[in-house]
Structures are given as structure tokens and as C-alpha cells.
Image (cartoon, rainbow, N blue to C red; front, side, top):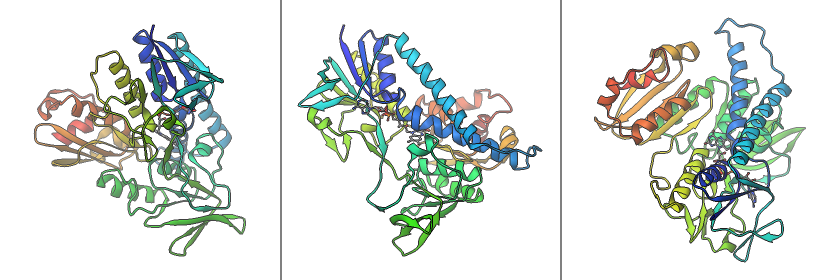
Length: 423
Ligand SMILES: Cc1cc2nc3c(=O)[nH]c(=O)nc-3n(C[C@H](O)[C@H](O)[C@H](O)COP(=O)(O)OP(=O)(O)OC[C@H]3O[C@@H](n4cnc5c(N)ncnc54)[C@H](O)[C@@H]3O)c2cc1C
């Protein structure tokens, strides 16, 4: 039986392990920390749990639903976050073990073209590297303790006045959670707009909604120094301004964990492993997920896993990034987008969708078509992170606008907003 050796058990590594077992390979999965990687332990799941709890509190205290007297206990919110990740982690470990994946809890090292695990060279027929990424700390002058997304998602933070450096997805999700719990939040970014990779509609409308939530934005602002001042944290900007708060979170991007991989003879470009369209880095060595793409998302990593296993079985049905990748930010309101944002755009305000009014009326759906096919989808509002998958199906499967007219959507649902926008 051929052996697949996988380093890293995030969504790239664990999906590759499960696919490889299904295809009958011997699979060894090496993980130095908790099973599930960044996504399950310090990323997607804990942030969503914390935003969800904060949103519930915001809803219960907002007066809209006739609910009165709601309070929160941060330690219990964190206990709920822990329970959520533990449940998922246990389930994942059981699935891996049941499917016959051999899990080795150790840090793999890369030396002289070899993979060393627990002091010994580990053999393989195929090697899949899925070592993920970690918070990137830019070269600011930092002379005090700062928070990163790791501290926040592990529950090591307080609901206090916060400066968030970075108006990307991670900074905005964490900033939203803190603001909904009542903290004063200031988001600072060197860029002129939030979410640099998002469509213009999201950049402009979402920042307006987040301002209404109480978040203050200082854009076009270059951070130079983070230090302690009169018992507070202070951030000095290039223009001479100094902003103070109780805590500072730095969320300006992620750094791929590629140290040592060049010793396997791989090409590393600006920190990322260079691969071909099937995630092949060299001969029988593959690199997937955050170490091999700038679209650092859990579902990109899982897709890469499928691409690699499909490739080594000889099927070669998919390529690395040939389909549109849905993206979203779990702020409140949420925003999500997929595809291309050219061509004709049809728009619908969310206030026209019955189910949306039950929760939030804020938001818009924007669908770009070429007349026949849907090309792009943008949504800001309640449920955007779910509806974006419907848009992905429609775009990837090339469902026509005329087909959508025939399809019966249930009422009242958020997804019927998709059809309403096109009609
Ligand atoms: C706060 C936050 C929120 C996020 N929210 C979302 C979201 O909502 N949706 C989304 O799609 N993405 C989200 N992401 C991104 C997502 O978490 C990553 O894109 C995804 O986890 C990448 O998967 P991966 O398999 O490449 O690596 P990772 O999940 O980072 O896993 C890599 C694993 O490799 C292990 N490892 C590294 N080196 C070694 C070694 N030498 N030996 C053994 N083990 C090793 C690490 O311990 C780790 O467990 C978020 C990220 C963060 C930080």
C-alpha cells in the first residue's frame, strides 16, 4: 500500500488524510499542536462562536425584540467557545481514527531533503505539506504587550476599549464582536478603504454599517509605534497623532509556516511555496492551504486537499484555483462575495426580503450577470455567509438566469432574496 505522509492537521491536512484513506492509501498525519489547525482552534470556529454570542447580546439589548434585562458573563462566553471547539475537535479526531489515519503528535522537521519526525526519518510515497500560517507582526516599534488573533480566539482578552490595527477580515470580525459587547473600538489601517480585496460595494456600505455600530475608523493611517502611556496602550501614527486604549490587537495579515521547507528542494517565493496547478511543489511533494495561496481560507485549503488526492490517483478532475472562491466577513451585518463584479448589476435592498426583516433590515444584494449567466454576487446583510454558497453553485454550475426563474424558492427565506434580485 502506498504511503501518504501529511504534515499539519488543519482543513488542508485533515481533508487530505480523509480523502487519501478513502482511496486506500496508508496515511500518517503529523501534528505538533491540536488537531484541526488554525481554523478549528484559533480561527474560523472560535471567531464565529464569539461573534455569535456578542450578536445575541446586542440583539437582546437592542430593544427591537421586546427582550429586556439581558447581561453577559465573559467567562461563560469563553466557556461556550471552548465547548464548541472541543466538540468539533473530538468529532474530527474520532473520524480520522475511525477511517484509519495514523495520527502522530510531534513536530516534523525538514533537514537535508528529509522529513524527520520524533528524531527519525519518516518515509513516504507522497508528501503533503499543510503547515498553515501564523499572525504576521509588522516591524513596528513595539514596547508593550499586544494581542493577536491567537489571544483573542483562545479567549485571552477583555471587553475594554480596543485599538485594532488592520481593517481586514480578522480585525473587523474581532472589532465587531468587541463593539457589540460594549467596548469602544478604533480600527486603524494604512489603506484608504477597509477589506482591500472586497468589491467596492462592500468597502463603502459595510464601513458605514460598522460606524453605526460604534466602530471608529482611522484609515490612511500608518502605525509607527505601540507603547505604554499613563497606564494605557498607545499607538503612534506617522502623522504625529497618538491614540490610546486599554488593549491593542494587531491583525495585519498571516505569515505562512514555510521555514525549513527549502531544504526539501522547494521553491519559496515571498514566504509561499511555489506549486503548479495541481499543488505539486516537486516530484511527489505537494503544498496546500495557507502555505501555497494568498487566498488564505479554510475552504481553499480543503479544495487543495481534494485536488492533490485526485491528482495522485490519476483522476486530475480539478485544478488548484479554477473555480471562484467565495469570501465573507462575519461582521454584523455580514458581507460575502464571489465571482466577477463587472457586467450588469441588479440590486435589491434587504428590507424587501420578508425573512431579513425578522432580523436585520440593513443590507443589499447585488448580482452581476452577462444577461444569460450570473457572474458575480455581493451581499451585505443577515445570512450573507450562507447565501454566498448558493451563488457559488449557480456560477460554478453555470445555471442560467432563466433556469433560476423556474426554480421554486421556499418562503420566507433569505435565499429567496437571490431570486428576487434577478427577477
Ligand atoms: C481569526 C481567524 C479567523 C478565520 N476565519 C476564517 C473563516 O471564517 N473562514 C475561512 O475560510 N478561513 C478563516 N480563517 C483562515 C483559516 O483558518 C485558514 O485559512 C486555514 O486554517 C488554513 O488551513 P491549513 O490547513 O492551510 O493550515 P492551518 O489550519 O493553519 O493548520 C496547519 C497545522 O499545521 C501544524 N504544523 C505546522 N508546522 C508543523 C510541523 N512542522 N509539524 C507538525 N505540525 C505542524 C500546525 O500546528 C497547524 O495545526 C481564519 C483565520 C483566523 C486566524
